[in-house]
Length: 278
Image 1 (cartoon, one colour):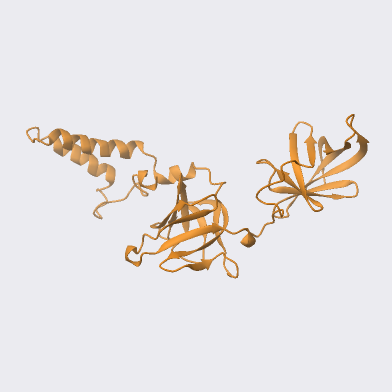
Image 2 (cartoon, helix red, strand yellow; image 1 turned 30 degrees about the vertical axis):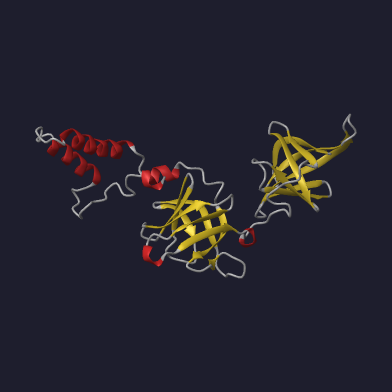
């Protein structure tokens, strides 16, 4: 759907004349055509240019459209390379020194893209397409989904080169951590972490580390340390601590820990909660 964006630049001129923007040109054509009522193609011509004008005024400027799309399903680290004319890993893959990452940092030309190649500096995510742009904002590649973590498509700057690029999600290059069972958690979580007023969350272990299961807490983990349960985000940043002040059994016989919360600076938050094992 990248081509539904009428223009990536609302001031784009069709002939280098600053007065000849898409909208101004369409309006001039409308006015011009109204003087030619005897032209047999008048109605078709007028309808075409009025559609141009309408589309410009009513179609989202692509920058606004790009900013409105949820990128959470695609952002992160990938392996990047060519499928044709030969299979070549360019960056982000095993043994590569540089990272290829679709970031969530929105700038004037789209979302910032970290790449080993200057031809890929920004990106858009438009339904079934990931569009790469170079440092000047020109479209360099358009990739289509080949599965959850694989995208492939043509390089547009030099069509004659017949280059096809791909990206493949490569968690080994991600600076953050994952449980060994990522991305498919165990079918049954081993415990429930209930913070009063915050709701019920599920966690599953990977050795002595317990990772969140579900969209709200899947990028957090905690470690039990004596009478404390210390919680981190997936990149190791301390989020807070649950201090255990009572251990008991539920009527169903499950182990239950009661306690209170401290923030990342060690200050009480005023909230209490419980962990039920089982």
